[in-house]
Amino acid sequence: MEWTQIYDPMHSLVFSALLAAIPIIVMFYLLAVRRTAGQIAGVMALISAILVAVLAYQMPVNLAIIAAAMGALYGIFPIFWIVITAIFIYNLTVETGQFEIIKDSIATITDDRRLQALLIAFGFGAFLEGAAGFGAPVAISAGMLVGLGFDPLYAAGLCLIANTAPVAFGAIGIPIIVAGQVTGIDVMKISAMVGRQLPFLSVIIPIWLIVLMSGWKAMKEVLPACLIAGISFAGVQWYSSNYIGPELPDILSSLACIIALTIFLRSWKPASIWRFENEPPPTLAINRSVLTFGKVLKAWSPFIILIIMVILWGLHPVVAVLDAVTVKWLVPGLDKMIVQVAPIVKQATPMAALYKINWLSAAGTGLFIASIFTAAVLGVGPGRFISIFAETFKQLTKPFITIPSVLGLAYVMNYSGMTSTLGLFLAGTGSLFPFFSPFLGWLGVFLTGSDTSANALFSNLQAVTAQQVGIDPIIAVAANSSGGVCGKMISPQSIAVATAATGLVGKEGDLFSFTVKHSLVLAVIVGIMTYVQAYWLNWMIP
View 1 (cartoon, rainbow, N blue to C red):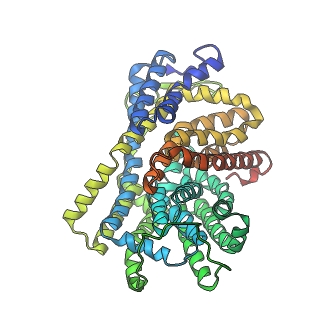
View 2: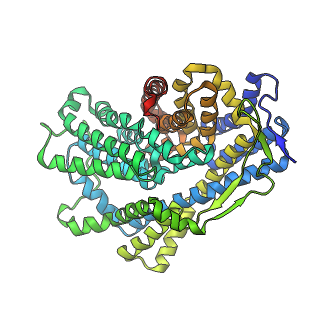
């Protein structure tokens, strides 16, 4: 029997919106106030969403549970499958000692702290965000900077702020992929739109970092290097997001940044070598003589293989062949059982519920095959291969709960009509909505610590609201991700990772104070950019 959504169960849109916001409030309270673990907050928010859907929105219990289960399944496959295979490749390089060579190959390029920050916090951090994400970029790059002699607070803060540029395309494009799955909008269009927003920040961030670190005068000494880093990163980020897809912008743009900056620094040096006052001696020992081309190439080979496999898996002819074995089924008990009505849709429309397991064409499968080639190159035998994979899964036990929970929450909110209620309420901002749109993503990432989770929570809300106020949903969904990146640096999870990596545990408040103003200013910039693109530069919308 069909069930028809209702969007104003309290007969007051304000109170109905407050009711629909309860799961989000639960998550905010547990994460920001109680500092509860992400997996616990995710499960509790999901439970609260089911309760609100059933008790207030009169959604049948079976529909609410099936919707949550469908979202959780999408969280496990393909999302978690991408996460675990990406981090598995990274762990293979760590366990075989190759990652130390990767770090050393970057650290030997320059002794200037400003340039090291550009290479490691901005360039290499973005590479790690693209390959692994989920805390690895800040943890690794901040630890490297401390090892090189950086002040711990600056090391952590700089890496958090630098992580702004790549987050939307992190972990092989998972945030964009999730946004497409939740909204039904073509992933390539979302990728292209984000790629027409974030490059503007990518040019600014290197300059921003160095000014924060050393002041305007010292920044001017390395302005050419800042421009090389920012423009090379932004240019490739724009091209790859618009013409290749959401999987590779971070990896390709970070490599372009690192290579361009390295080549530039071979023929250009700043007028003086800048270091922190009273900085501790470096603890990261570097033996330059052993860094032969062959060793460096071998160390970077896992990520070279990763890039090749992701490119292959993104080619349409390859996808068409691999998709031949995709398993698809209409979710029983949910497909066409829920009806959307006006004003969300023009006429009553049953909601489809299709789940598919593209087990061969999924990006995670391509990465897993890349891990097999990586093991062969690095000399990792079958026993050790399985052992490292098991350790990787153990490492990701909490995300294995958190990601399905948050996606389950998103699906319950979407299928119950709660997201539509919030969208109708936000539509009251009218023509100003494009400015506030990025702040929803900012709030989502602050709450969850993940652009992926924020997109799962709010992407459909963005699309619904955009339709209500008369702007293209693509720009609002993209703004959710672009604005979300500005909230990453102040999320409790990011702060915890950064303080743990730099020995600042117990000083989370100091680090939050260090980053919060930058987070807000960058979010305002994205808001202004979105507003301008929505009304005056709408030719930029794909």
